[in-house]
Length: 123
Image (cartoon, rainbow, N blue to C red; front, top):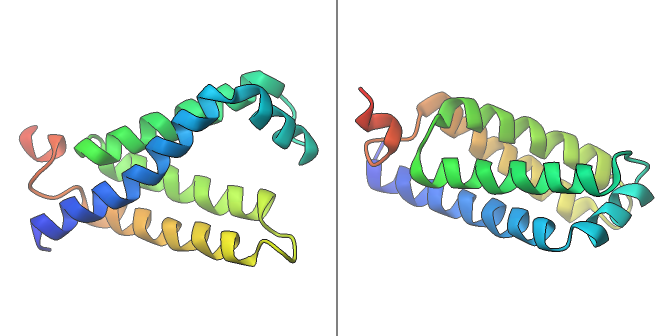
C-alpha cells in the first residue's frame, strides 16, 4: 500500500473521532440524555467513557499507535453504535456511514498503519 495514502486515510478517519469524542466530553450531560433516550444506562459516566474512547481511539489512529488493535475496536464500535443508535427509518444515512467507517477501520486493522506511524518506528 502507498504509505502516503495510508497516512491520509488515517487522518481522515481520525478527524471524525477526535472531533466527536471531544464534543461528547465537552457536552457530556447532553450526550448522557441522548444515551438515556436510547435506553443505555450509565448516564454521564457512560457519556465520558464513550467520549474518551472516541477521542483516544482517534488520536491513536492519527499517529498510528497500536493501529491494528484500535482499528478492530473502532470497527466494532461503529457497527454496534450503528445498530443501537441508527436503526430508525430516518437514520439510514447514519447507519451506512457507520458501516462504511467500520470498513475503513477493518482495512487499517488488516493492513496496519503504514510507514508514517508510531507502529512503524517500533520495529
